[in-house]
Image 1: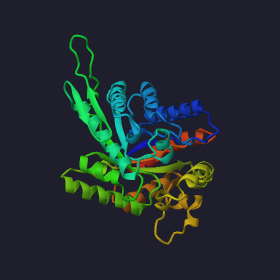
Image 2: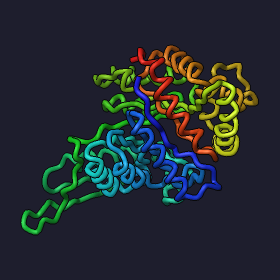
Image 3: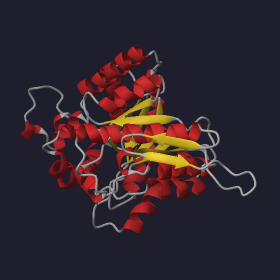
Image 4: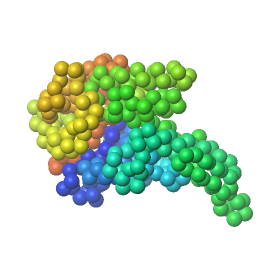
Length: 360
């Protein structure tokens, strides 16, 4: 099993933007030195807790500070972007990272983001439809030779061919050909995004709050969609995200998790997602009441919290419950004492990883 980081990123609103980004970069550099496989940085425009509206900028700086760790957008919110601009930014980032880029894509956006971009008139199906069209445009643009044109429902593009004398015209393509590895993230139990990903041969990522029974549904959707489309999928490519907090003892880890993960859950997750499926999907069975979904429940049933042995056991149990996966992505945290998160990364890679090294 490989380990990576997923930065939503989560920062309490009292943390300054500059300090938040410095803390994120410190974690990425530390993860690179520890041998973590990859890091993903989320894109959120109107979420103050998740203050990364331009993840490519953070990844660009991180690429100059690291050597081996793969760098991913987690995810590019396709609906919000002009696809020509996004295609150029991703292609340039692939060159800046010298091919260490992984491109995560998402087909949805929260209501406030849509409103900020003047897209709140779009309905659910239209949001996904605009995203799918943007992706098609980007991929066709990257594969084009000479003049490029695209006419769809949402975008009408005519790119000039490169003039060999004046050296003007469309020219920017990714370093990795035909494009960086593409991943699709899913946060709902039977996600349309993850179905589309499997049909197109992209790699799947499952979000952190899903109970094991819903994660298992993800893989069923992936296998069914791949079979229909004639594509191949492998559990070793499947990324599963989880909130992780590790300390030398179970007791210390639980106390810290209540302070840090609990703060995020109570102040950010519950107020914003209490009426959505994202919170309901944390129920391990239908007998769990809404009032039961407190911090203690999450520590006991969803999050990976404890000493190294306890966390290794929780990872193994999750692996067995869902039928196996290849990468665990630890959701990064921002405790007021940053050494707590540094200790989590150290223990995860140095003590937990060897205990689960027999898994895929």
